[in-house]
Length: 373
Image (cartoon, rainbow, N blue to C red; front, side):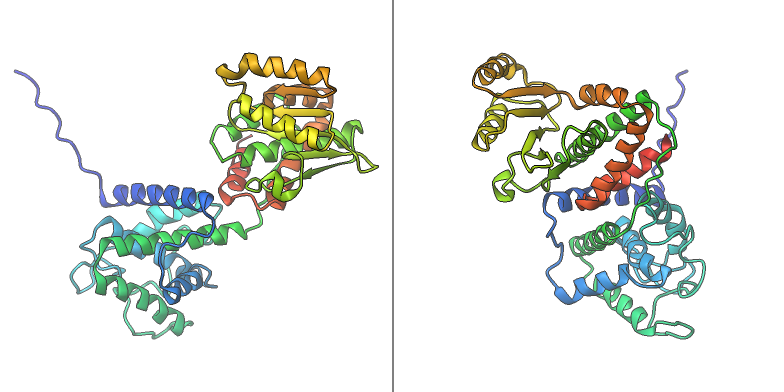
């Protein structure tokens, strides 16, 4: 007799909430990276209330909208104003457990952007069955009523798309808040060459529109200049700014003490095409730069032979073009400079990430990888 197949267990409310939060966060992070000015709601007053809530001086208030709206998004039948399952109202549920089991761990992965609490609803003002206009015992009565007004609007409309848009606006404000945080990068006292290269490889494994690759390249050439005295400084543009707008020849310009550009660097976080190569060469010639480095993840197969031919032709007319995989170049440089340059390089990456307002996601990832070394 054949064994009966085990009954498939449906995911719990908290499992579904966790998946929803992860998916929505990834969506908002990607949207913000592609369009920093994005907004999910057009109501200016409502957006201002959300911003004020996410940046409130009380931890429970900062967590309140993420927790309450996530509950509603996970199960539309819930009342987003409920805080305890025993509330005498339809749609009552346990918001405190959602906060401690789902939202707090997610917040910890985001460098505790909303605060360090592992149980945000442990004390006042969240220890009540429902959010109502009763402000007894609350320090910020106006803030409470503002939050209640937002959630009242959610229940009044009872529209899933509106609830989702509102939740995404909350997550967007979390990203904005995260962008203002000062990250501490825990750089080890010693770093081996393999460990440093693995750190870079892991960091580049996730696409970032070139942001991470440019930060690593800028850090590498900065320590090259400092350690070997080949040039005095490195000029760098923003990742999303065209070279024509910045007036720069390339992504990086390595400048001598007399102001002359010793070499330029173009950075690609993908394979190099012949079109990329031609564009780089044209910019170098327009500013009479003779030494040109191109860092890419290899050469596109269709462009391999053309790039070789154009490199030879460029040499004949006075330009030296070097195409490297970043990790290949870093291996040589960081070996020649020994331990001191490796640590200086890793410290400089953090400086680049902070100085050029890199996406919080990319700064946070560098911090996390360093914590794992």
